[in-house]
Length: 487
Image (cartoon, rainbow, N blue to C red; front, side, top):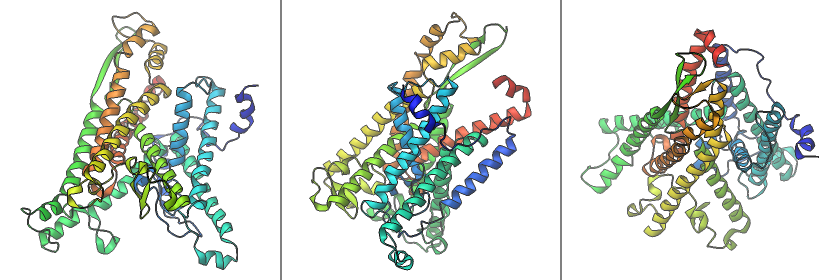
Protein backbone atom coordinates (compact mmCIF):
# COMPACT_ATOMS: atom_id res chain seq x y z
CA UNK A 1 0.00 0.00 0.00
CA UNK A 2 1.42 3.41 -1.01
CA UNK A 3 1.62 6.40 1.30
CA UNK A 4 -1.20 8.02 -0.65
CA UNK A 5 -3.61 5.20 0.22
CA UNK A 6 -2.58 5.34 3.88
CA UNK A 7 -2.80 9.14 4.18
CA UNK A 8 -5.89 9.70 2.04
CA UNK A 9 -8.46 9.25 4.89
CA UNK A 10 -6.71 12.05 6.82
CA UNK A 11 -5.85 14.38 3.95
CA UNK A 12 -9.34 14.43 2.42
CA UNK A 13 -10.82 15.40 5.80
CA UNK A 14 -8.68 18.48 6.32
CA UNK A 15 -10.78 21.65 6.77
CA UNK A 16 -11.41 23.34 3.46
CA UNK A 17 -13.35 26.21 1.92
CA UNK A 18 -15.96 25.15 -0.61
CA UNK A 19 -15.27 26.23 -4.17
CA UNK A 20 -17.86 28.36 -5.98
CA UNK A 21 -20.05 26.26 -8.24
CA UNK A 22 -20.22 28.85 -10.99
CA UNK A 23 -18.89 32.22 -11.97
CA UNK A 24 -18.44 34.68 -9.10
CA UNK A 25 -19.26 38.26 -10.15
CA UNK A 26 -16.45 40.74 -9.82
CA UNK A 27 -18.26 42.88 -7.26
CA UNK A 28 -18.86 39.84 -5.08
CA UNK A 29 -15.18 38.96 -5.32
CA UNK A 30 -14.28 42.45 -4.16
CA UNK A 31 -16.76 42.10 -1.29
CA UNK A 32 -15.23 38.80 -0.15
CA UNK A 33 -11.74 40.28 -0.42
CA UNK A 34 -12.62 43.42 1.52
CA UNK A 35 -14.48 41.46 4.20
CA UNK A 36 -11.57 39.07 4.69
CA UNK A 37 -9.12 41.98 4.96
CA UNK A 38 -11.32 43.62 7.60
CA UNK A 39 -11.34 40.35 9.54
CA UNK A 40 -7.54 40.16 9.19
CA UNK A 41 -7.08 43.68 10.60
CA UNK A 42 -9.49 42.85 13.43
CA UNK A 43 -7.66 39.64 14.39
CA UNK A 44 -4.27 41.38 14.21
CA UNK A 45 -5.52 43.65 17.01
CA UNK A 46 -6.96 40.88 19.22
CA UNK A 47 -4.31 40.30 21.88
CA UNK A 48 -3.63 36.93 23.44
CA UNK A 49 -5.46 36.34 26.71
CA UNK A 50 -3.05 35.48 29.49
CA UNK A 51 0.15 36.62 27.75
CA UNK A 52 2.46 39.47 28.60
CA UNK A 53 4.11 41.37 25.76
CA UNK A 54 7.48 39.64 25.34
CA UNK A 55 10.25 40.40 22.87
CA UNK A 56 9.27 40.02 19.23
CA UNK A 57 11.51 37.26 17.91
CA UNK A 58 10.27 37.91 14.36
CA UNK A 59 10.39 41.70 14.71
CA UNK A 60 12.76 42.16 11.77
CA UNK A 61 10.67 39.80 9.63
CA UNK A 62 7.27 40.87 10.96
CA UNK A 63 6.13 42.77 7.85
CA UNK A 64 6.88 39.71 5.67
CA UNK A 65 5.09 37.30 8.00
CA UNK A 66 2.01 39.57 8.14
CA UNK A 67 1.31 38.93 11.80
CA UNK A 68 1.14 40.90 15.02
CA UNK A 69 3.28 40.47 18.12
CA UNK A 70 1.23 39.25 21.07
CA UNK A 71 -1.95 38.91 18.99
CA UNK A 72 -3.94 35.90 17.89
CA UNK A 73 -2.10 36.22 14.54
CA UNK A 74 1.27 35.88 16.29
CA UNK A 75 2.55 33.43 13.68
CA UNK A 76 1.14 35.27 10.65
CA UNK A 77 1.71 33.50 7.34
CA UNK A 78 4.95 31.92 8.62
CA UNK A 79 3.57 28.35 8.85
CA UNK A 80 2.04 28.64 5.37
CA UNK A 81 5.33 29.82 3.89
CA UNK A 82 7.40 27.18 5.71
CA UNK A 83 5.02 24.42 4.60
CA UNK A 84 5.28 25.72 1.03
CA UNK A 85 9.09 25.54 1.25
CA UNK A 86 8.91 21.90 2.37
CA UNK A 87 6.49 21.03 -0.42
CA UNK A 88 8.64 22.90 -2.94
CA UNK A 89 11.67 20.84 -1.96
CA UNK A 90 9.77 17.54 -1.90
CA UNK A 91 8.01 18.28 -5.17
CA UNK A 92 11.20 19.51 -6.84
CA UNK A 93 12.95 16.26 -5.89
CA UNK A 94 9.88 14.29 -7.11
CA UNK A 95 9.57 12.51 -3.77
CA UNK A 96 5.81 12.91 -3.43
CA UNK A 97 4.77 10.99 -6.52
CA UNK A 98 1.77 13.25 -7.05
CA UNK A 99 0.42 14.16 -10.48
CA UNK A 100 -1.19 17.60 -10.24
CA UNK A 101 -3.18 16.85 -13.39
CA UNK A 102 -4.95 13.99 -11.57
CA UNK A 103 -8.02 15.27 -9.60
CA UNK A 104 -7.38 12.74 -6.80
CA UNK A 105 -3.75 13.80 -6.46
CA UNK A 106 -4.81 17.46 -6.46
CA UNK A 107 -7.02 16.82 -3.43
CA UNK A 108 -4.21 14.90 -1.71
CA UNK A 109 -1.72 17.68 -2.44
CA UNK A 110 -4.00 20.35 -1.00
CA UNK A 111 -4.71 18.20 2.05
CA UNK A 112 -0.99 17.53 2.52
CA UNK A 113 -0.25 21.24 2.34
CA UNK A 114 -2.83 21.99 5.03
CA UNK A 115 -1.54 19.17 7.22
CA UNK A 116 1.99 20.56 6.93
CA UNK A 117 0.70 24.04 7.85
CA UNK A 118 -0.89 22.58 11.01
CA UNK A 119 2.37 20.80 11.84
CA UNK A 120 4.35 24.02 11.33
CA UNK A 121 1.91 25.91 13.57
CA UNK A 122 2.70 23.41 16.32
CA UNK A 123 6.45 23.35 15.66
CA UNK A 124 6.63 27.15 15.76
CA UNK A 125 4.01 27.90 18.41
CA UNK A 126 5.03 25.34 21.04
CA UNK A 127 8.66 26.54 21.39
CA UNK A 128 7.44 30.14 21.29
CA UNK A 129 5.21 29.57 24.33
CA UNK A 130 7.11 26.93 26.30
CA UNK A 131 10.80 27.33 25.40
CA UNK A 132 12.24 30.52 26.80
CA UNK A 133 9.35 32.87 27.50
CA UNK A 134 8.93 34.55 24.11
CA UNK A 135 5.30 35.00 25.20
CA UNK A 136 5.57 35.18 29.00
CA UNK A 137 2.51 34.44 31.13
CA UNK A 138 0.78 37.37 32.82
CA UNK A 139 1.01 36.35 36.53
CA UNK A 140 -2.19 38.20 37.40
CA UNK A 141 -4.18 36.01 34.99
CA UNK A 142 -2.85 32.78 36.50
CA UNK A 143 -3.59 34.09 40.00
CA UNK A 144 -7.10 35.23 39.07
CA UNK A 145 -7.93 31.85 37.51
CA UNK A 146 -6.21 29.96 40.39
CA UNK A 147 -4.42 27.69 37.92
CA UNK A 148 -0.72 26.88 37.35
CA UNK A 149 1.16 28.86 34.74
CA UNK A 150 1.42 25.76 32.55
CA UNK A 151 -2.37 25.82 32.11
CA UNK A 152 -2.24 29.46 30.99
CA UNK A 153 0.57 28.58 28.58
CA UNK A 154 -1.58 25.90 26.98
CA UNK A 155 -4.38 28.46 26.74
CA UNK A 156 -2.02 30.87 24.95
CA UNK A 157 -0.90 28.15 22.55
CA UNK A 158 -4.54 27.24 21.81
CA UNK A 159 -5.20 30.86 20.78
CA UNK A 160 -2.10 30.89 18.57
CA UNK A 161 -3.18 27.59 17.00
CA UNK A 162 -6.66 28.93 16.24
CA UNK A 163 -5.14 32.08 14.73
CA UNK A 164 -2.85 30.01 12.49
CA UNK A 165 -5.77 27.92 11.21
CA UNK A 166 -7.90 31.05 10.68
CA UNK A 167 -5.29 32.78 8.52
CA UNK A 168 -4.95 29.56 6.48
CA UNK A 169 -8.70 29.51 5.85
CA UNK A 170 -8.79 33.27 5.12
CA UNK A 171 -6.08 32.76 2.50
CA UNK A 172 -8.20 30.02 0.94
CA UNK A 173 -11.33 32.22 0.98
CA UNK A 174 -9.56 34.96 -0.99
CA UNK A 175 -7.99 32.45 -3.41
CA UNK A 176 -11.36 30.83 -4.21
CA UNK A 177 -13.90 33.61 -3.70
CA UNK A 178 -11.88 36.83 -3.88
CA UNK A 179 -9.25 38.58 -5.96
CA UNK A 180 -5.56 37.69 -5.77
CA UNK A 181 -3.82 35.62 -3.12
CA UNK A 182 -4.56 35.87 0.58
CA UNK A 183 -0.90 35.58 1.54
CA UNK A 184 0.01 38.41 -0.83
CA UNK A 185 -2.86 40.65 0.28
CA UNK A 186 -2.01 40.21 3.96
CA UNK A 187 1.58 41.25 3.24
CA UNK A 188 0.42 44.28 1.25
CA UNK A 189 -2.01 45.26 4.02
CA UNK A 190 0.64 45.14 6.75
CA UNK A 191 3.32 46.91 4.72
CA UNK A 192 0.92 49.61 3.47
CA UNK A 193 -0.07 50.33 7.05
CA UNK A 194 3.58 50.86 7.98
CA UNK A 195 4.25 52.96 4.87
CA UNK A 196 1.39 55.31 5.64
CA UNK A 197 2.54 55.54 9.25
CA UNK A 198 6.10 56.22 8.10
CA UNK A 199 4.87 59.10 5.95
CA UNK A 200 2.16 60.71 8.08
CA UNK A 201 2.72 59.57 11.66
CA UNK A 202 2.05 62.35 14.21
CA UNK A 203 3.93 61.75 17.49
CA UNK A 204 1.27 63.25 19.75
CA UNK A 205 -1.44 61.02 18.30
CA UNK A 206 0.34 57.80 17.44
CA UNK A 207 3.02 57.68 20.13
CA UNK A 208 5.66 57.05 17.43
CA UNK A 209 8.35 59.18 15.92
CA UNK A 210 7.13 61.65 13.29
CA UNK A 211 6.61 60.50 9.73
CA UNK A 212 8.71 61.86 6.89
CA UNK A 213 6.18 64.44 5.71
CA UNK A 214 5.28 65.38 9.29
CA UNK A 215 8.95 65.75 10.21
CA UNK A 216 9.68 68.02 7.24
CA UNK A 217 6.75 70.26 8.12
CA UNK A 218 8.17 70.61 11.64
CA UNK A 219 11.70 71.17 10.24
CA UNK A 220 10.47 73.96 7.95
CA UNK A 221 8.53 75.52 10.84
CA UNK A 222 11.62 75.38 13.04
CA UNK A 223 10.11 72.97 15.59
CA UNK A 224 12.84 70.37 14.86
CA UNK A 225 16.49 71.37 14.70
CA UNK A 226 18.67 69.21 12.46
CA UNK A 227 21.85 71.27 12.46
CA UNK A 228 23.85 72.57 9.55
CA UNK A 229 24.04 70.20 6.54
CA UNK A 230 27.70 71.24 6.20
CA UNK A 231 28.53 69.32 9.39
CA UNK A 232 28.74 65.53 9.60
CA UNK A 233 26.07 65.31 12.30
CA UNK A 234 23.66 67.59 10.43
CA UNK A 235 24.17 65.73 7.14
CA UNK A 236 23.54 62.35 8.77
CA UNK A 237 20.43 63.73 10.46
CA UNK A 238 19.05 64.91 7.12
CA UNK A 239 19.97 61.79 5.17
CA UNK A 240 19.26 58.99 7.66
CA UNK A 241 17.88 60.68 10.79
CA UNK A 242 14.89 62.97 11.13
CA UNK A 243 15.03 64.05 7.47
CA UNK A 244 14.98 60.47 6.11
CA UNK A 245 15.97 61.69 2.65
CA UNK A 246 17.80 58.48 1.70
CA UNK A 247 15.01 56.11 2.89
CA UNK A 248 12.46 58.21 1.00
CA UNK A 249 14.49 58.14 -2.22
CA UNK A 250 15.17 54.41 -1.76
CA UNK A 251 11.45 53.69 -1.39
CA UNK A 252 10.59 55.67 -4.52
CA UNK A 253 13.44 54.08 -6.47
CA UNK A 254 12.36 50.54 -5.51
CA UNK A 255 8.81 51.35 -6.62
CA UNK A 256 10.06 52.62 -9.98
CA UNK A 257 12.51 49.75 -10.62
CA UNK A 258 10.02 46.99 -9.78
CA UNK A 259 7.23 48.53 -11.88
CA UNK A 260 9.66 48.91 -14.79
CA UNK A 261 11.02 45.35 -14.35
CA UNK A 262 7.46 43.97 -14.34
CA UNK A 263 6.93 45.54 -17.76
CA UNK A 264 10.21 44.21 -19.26
CA UNK A 265 9.51 40.98 -21.10
CA UNK A 266 10.41 38.78 -24.04
CA UNK A 267 7.31 38.13 -26.13
CA UNK A 268 7.29 34.86 -28.06
CA UNK A 269 4.90 35.04 -31.06
CA UNK A 270 2.18 32.38 -31.30
CA UNK A 271 -0.34 31.47 -33.98
CA UNK A 272 -3.28 29.09 -33.95
CA UNK A 273 -2.75 25.89 -35.89
CA UNK A 274 -6.33 25.68 -37.18
CA UNK A 275 -7.74 29.21 -37.04
CA UNK A 276 -6.09 31.31 -39.70
CA UNK A 277 -5.16 34.79 -38.55
CA UNK A 278 -5.50 33.98 -34.83
CA UNK A 279 -2.28 35.17 -33.27
CA UNK A 280 -0.98 35.89 -29.80
CA UNK A 281 2.16 36.31 -27.74
CA UNK A 282 3.53 34.46 -24.74
CA UNK A 283 5.27 36.95 -22.40
CA UNK A 284 8.36 35.87 -20.46
CA UNK A 285 8.76 38.65 -17.88
CA UNK A 286 12.09 39.68 -16.42
CA UNK A 287 10.77 38.85 -12.93
CA UNK A 288 9.31 35.62 -14.31
CA UNK A 289 9.17 33.77 -10.99
CA UNK A 290 7.70 36.84 -9.27
CA UNK A 291 9.06 38.16 -5.98
CA UNK A 292 7.37 35.46 -3.90
CA UNK A 293 10.49 33.22 -3.72
CA UNK A 294 12.00 36.00 -1.59
CA UNK A 295 9.44 35.12 1.06
CA UNK A 296 10.95 31.65 1.19
CA UNK A 297 14.47 33.04 1.62
CA UNK A 298 13.52 35.48 4.38
CA UNK A 299 11.33 32.88 6.09
CA UNK A 300 14.30 30.51 6.11
CA UNK A 301 16.49 33.23 7.64
CA UNK A 302 13.76 33.98 10.18
CA UNK A 303 13.58 30.32 11.21
CA UNK A 304 17.37 30.23 11.60
CA UNK A 305 17.23 33.23 13.95
CA UNK A 306 14.31 31.64 15.78
CA UNK A 307 16.43 28.53 16.36
CA UNK A 308 19.31 30.68 17.62
CA UNK A 309 17.06 32.48 20.11
CA UNK A 310 15.71 29.18 21.42
CA UNK A 311 19.24 27.79 21.88
CA UNK A 312 20.32 30.96 23.68
CA UNK A 313 17.29 30.90 25.97
CA UNK A 314 17.95 27.26 26.81
CA UNK A 315 21.73 27.34 27.26
CA UNK A 316 22.40 31.02 28.02
CA UNK A 317 26.07 31.91 28.41
CA UNK A 318 27.04 28.23 28.06
CA UNK A 319 26.17 28.43 24.35
CA UNK A 320 29.42 28.07 22.35
CA UNK A 321 30.68 31.50 21.27
CA UNK A 322 31.33 30.30 17.73
CA UNK A 323 27.64 29.51 17.48
CA UNK A 324 26.27 32.75 18.89
CA UNK A 325 26.92 35.62 21.29
CA UNK A 326 23.81 37.52 22.37
CA UNK A 327 23.19 40.93 23.95
CA UNK A 328 19.69 42.18 24.76
CA UNK A 329 18.25 39.20 22.93
CA UNK A 330 20.03 39.94 19.63
CA UNK A 331 23.08 38.16 18.18
CA UNK A 332 26.26 40.26 18.30
CA UNK A 333 28.76 37.55 17.41
CA UNK A 334 29.11 33.99 16.21
CA UNK A 335 27.40 32.13 13.40
CA UNK A 336 23.91 33.44 14.13
CA UNK A 337 25.21 37.03 13.94
CA UNK A 338 26.64 36.52 10.46
CA UNK A 339 23.47 34.74 9.31
CA UNK A 340 21.29 37.59 10.58
CA UNK A 341 20.47 39.81 7.58
CA UNK A 342 21.11 43.56 7.58
CA UNK A 343 17.87 45.44 8.25
CA UNK A 344 18.81 49.09 8.85
CA UNK A 345 21.66 51.44 7.83
CA UNK A 346 22.82 51.64 11.46
CA UNK A 347 23.65 47.91 11.43
CA UNK A 348 26.50 48.35 8.95
CA UNK A 349 27.67 51.99 9.22
CA UNK A 350 30.47 51.30 11.70
CA UNK A 351 32.02 54.75 11.29
CA UNK A 352 28.98 56.33 12.98
CA UNK A 353 29.59 54.35 16.16
CA UNK A 354 26.24 52.56 15.88
CA UNK A 355 27.84 49.09 15.85
CA UNK A 356 30.36 47.57 18.25
CA UNK A 357 31.77 44.96 15.87
CA UNK A 358 34.99 45.38 13.91
CA UNK A 359 34.60 46.67 10.33
CA UNK A 360 35.71 43.32 8.87
CA UNK A 361 32.93 41.58 10.83
CA UNK A 362 30.35 44.00 9.45
CA UNK A 363 31.66 43.58 5.89
CA UNK A 364 31.59 39.79 6.27
CA UNK A 365 28.00 39.93 7.52
CA UNK A 366 26.94 42.08 4.56
CA UNK A 367 28.72 39.72 2.14
CA UNK A 368 27.04 36.65 3.65
CA UNK A 369 23.65 38.36 3.51
CA UNK A 370 24.20 39.24 -0.16
CA UNK A 371 25.33 35.72 -1.06
CA UNK A 372 22.44 34.20 0.89
CA UNK A 373 19.88 36.40 -0.85
CA UNK A 374 21.32 35.97 -4.35
CA UNK A 375 21.84 32.23 -4.02
CA UNK A 376 18.51 31.69 -2.30
CA UNK A 377 16.72 33.91 -4.81
CA UNK A 378 18.11 31.88 -7.72
CA UNK A 379 17.42 28.48 -6.12
CA UNK A 380 13.88 29.25 -5.03
CA UNK A 381 13.10 30.98 -8.33
CA UNK A 382 14.11 27.85 -10.23
CA UNK A 383 12.14 25.65 -7.82
CA UNK A 384 9.12 27.94 -8.10
CA UNK A 385 9.22 27.88 -11.89
CA UNK A 386 9.47 24.09 -12.03
CA UNK A 387 6.91 23.24 -9.34
CA UNK A 388 4.35 25.92 -10.31
CA UNK A 389 4.07 24.56 -13.88
CA UNK A 390 5.92 27.56 -15.28
CA UNK A 391 8.94 25.68 -16.65
CA UNK A 392 9.69 25.06 -20.34
CA UNK A 393 8.09 21.61 -20.40
CA UNK A 394 4.87 22.62 -18.64
CA UNK A 395 4.59 25.82 -20.67
CA UNK A 396 5.09 23.92 -23.92
CA UNK A 397 2.29 21.50 -22.99
CA UNK A 398 -0.05 24.36 -22.14
CA UNK A 399 0.63 26.11 -25.45
CA UNK A 400 0.18 22.87 -27.40
CA UNK A 401 -3.06 22.00 -25.58
CA UNK A 402 -4.47 25.42 -26.46
CA UNK A 403 -3.92 24.66 -30.16
CA UNK A 404 -1.23 27.32 -30.55
CA UNK A 405 2.22 26.96 -32.12
CA UNK A 406 5.29 29.10 -32.73
CA UNK A 407 5.30 30.41 -36.34
CA UNK A 408 8.08 28.87 -38.40
CA UNK A 409 8.32 25.75 -36.16
CA UNK A 410 6.56 22.40 -36.29
CA UNK A 411 3.55 21.95 -34.00
CA UNK A 412 5.30 19.69 -31.54
CA UNK A 413 5.64 19.87 -27.76
CA UNK A 414 9.33 19.06 -27.90
CA UNK A 415 10.00 21.84 -30.40
CA UNK A 416 8.11 24.41 -28.32
CA UNK A 417 9.94 23.23 -25.20
CA UNK A 418 13.35 23.74 -26.83
CA UNK A 419 12.37 27.29 -27.80
CA UNK A 420 11.18 28.01 -24.24
CA UNK A 421 14.45 26.65 -22.83
CA UNK A 422 16.26 29.53 -24.55
CA UNK A 423 14.45 32.06 -22.35
CA UNK A 424 12.71 30.76 -19.22
CA UNK A 425 15.65 29.31 -17.23
CA UNK A 426 17.89 32.30 -17.93
CA UNK A 427 15.16 34.83 -17.14
CA UNK A 428 14.32 33.01 -13.90
CA UNK A 429 17.95 33.28 -12.78
CA UNK A 430 18.25 36.95 -13.81
CA UNK A 431 15.00 37.80 -12.04
CA UNK A 432 16.17 36.07 -8.85
CA UNK A 433 19.46 37.99 -8.96
CA UNK A 434 17.71 41.33 -9.53
CA UNK A 435 15.22 41.03 -6.68
CA UNK A 436 17.93 39.70 -4.35
CA UNK A 437 20.19 42.70 -5.00
CA UNK A 438 17.29 45.15 -4.63
CA UNK A 439 16.20 43.58 -1.33
CA UNK A 440 19.68 43.82 0.23
CA UNK A 441 20.30 47.37 -1.01
CA UNK A 442 16.90 48.54 0.26
CA UNK A 443 17.66 47.11 3.70
CA UNK A 444 21.10 48.74 3.80
CA UNK A 445 19.82 52.17 2.74
CA UNK A 446 16.59 52.04 4.73
CA UNK A 447 12.97 52.54 3.71
CA UNK A 448 10.00 54.57 4.89
CA UNK A 449 8.30 53.14 7.96
CA UNK A 450 11.26 50.88 8.76
CA UNK A 451 9.90 48.06 6.58
CA UNK A 452 12.39 45.64 5.07
CA UNK A 453 13.48 45.83 1.45
CA UNK A 454 11.98 42.40 0.81
CA UNK A 455 8.61 43.58 2.13
CA UNK A 456 8.70 46.63 -0.11
CA UNK A 457 9.59 44.53 -3.16
CA UNK A 458 6.80 42.11 -2.37
CA UNK A 459 4.29 44.91 -1.88
CA UNK A 460 5.07 46.62 -5.19
CA UNK A 461 5.12 43.35 -7.14
CA UNK A 462 1.95 41.96 -5.55
CA UNK A 463 0.13 45.27 -6.05
CA UNK A 464 1.17 45.37 -9.72
CA UNK A 465 -0.06 41.80 -10.27
CA UNK A 466 -3.26 42.58 -8.39
CA UNK A 467 -3.82 45.54 -10.73
CA UNK A 468 -3.36 43.24 -13.74
CA UNK A 469 -5.75 40.66 -12.27
CA UNK A 470 -8.40 43.29 -11.52
CA UNK A 471 -8.09 44.61 -15.08
CA UNK A 472 -8.49 41.04 -16.40
CA UNK A 473 -11.52 40.43 -14.17
CA UNK A 474 -13.15 43.64 -15.41
CA UNK A 475 -12.48 42.59 -19.01
CA UNK A 476 -14.09 39.20 -18.39
CA UNK A 477 -17.06 40.90 -16.70
CA UNK A 478 -17.61 43.28 -19.63
CA UNK A 479 -17.15 40.57 -22.26
CA UNK A 480 -18.54 37.18 -21.09
CA UNK A 481 -17.30 35.53 -24.27
CA UNK A 482 -13.75 36.23 -23.14
CA UNK A 483 -14.45 34.31 -19.94
CA UNK A 484 -15.68 31.32 -21.95
CA UNK A 485 -12.63 31.52 -24.21
CA UNK A 486 -10.12 31.51 -21.33
CA UNK A 487 -12.08 29.14 -19.12
